[in-house]
Image (cartoon, rainbow, N blue to C red):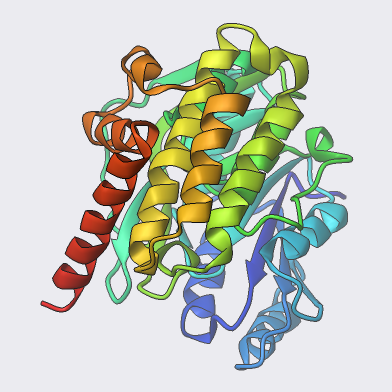
Amino acid sequence: MLPTVSLVLTTYNDKPYIDQAIQSVLSQSHTDFECIIIDDGSTDGTAEICRKYADTDPRIRVITQSNSGASAARNVGIGEARGTWLAFVDSDDILHPDFISDCLYACMHNPCDLVICEAVVFADGSAPDFPETADTEMENEEAPAALRKLLEGEYIPNVWARLYRRECLAGTGFPLELVVGEDMEFSVRLMLRLSRVCHVNLPRYAYRKRDGSVLSRFKPELLSNRLSFCRAIQTTLGPSATREPLSRSLQIMAATHLGYYGMKDMVRSGVMNEAWLFAMRDCLSREFDISAKQLPALGLPTRREKWLKFALGPCWLAKLFLKYQIRKHKRDANR
């Protein structure tokens, strides 16, 4: 008999955390699941820990591969999954015991192709706190509305804290060429194939915030990849990207991820990259039709709008602003 849910857990050199992640899977109140662990070439003993669990619980399968990245590992998991529903789990995160059961309850009472639950963030070295909430309202909406929320940042662009109808993932996969934004690109592409999305106001996933995580480290290729990522989203949306209301949502996404977060990346790098600054300005202006005068109409948070006004203003002012922010970042880091 095929399982109701497939949990795809990807891991790479996460020996200090993998036990907790697997234990949270095995502690699920809904027990009709399979857990497919994709070990992406670990060298620290992570794979051996995973195999010990697989030896004692037939619901766990371990697949090892040479180091190819999280996207490639998730793609393998999608191909191996047999459940009606599928969820992604990161190997340093923790599931609430009712993650599966509450997500299944939501989709059974609100016909949909995707369930989104809330997530909590906990610091490395601490335990997650799953606050109980009296507001357990479930919002069922058409996929186009959910897509706009995703682009505008109302839904966090991740793939965990989600339960997907597996058949909707057929023929999809994570892009291997992106260093940043692969979760967003995958989610946008998938949203175009869905009918309805259900949002559950229950925290059922815990994301571990680590100092050495991908999101907290600067990589030089992040800057160029932000350009590629935003262009990939625009290409994925196709002709609909030029029509309201999606065109405004796309502008908000580009302004946020390319303009604001791109400049934040540059500040963290400690280097003034004029070539990238000019490329970013040109991309926002020519490809996404965003100017400094249009920013108020996008309804961005005040801080983001401020940074973007400098970015899209006179070149000399944009460079002066970024040089100041870089000096400030270095000064604060040395305190």
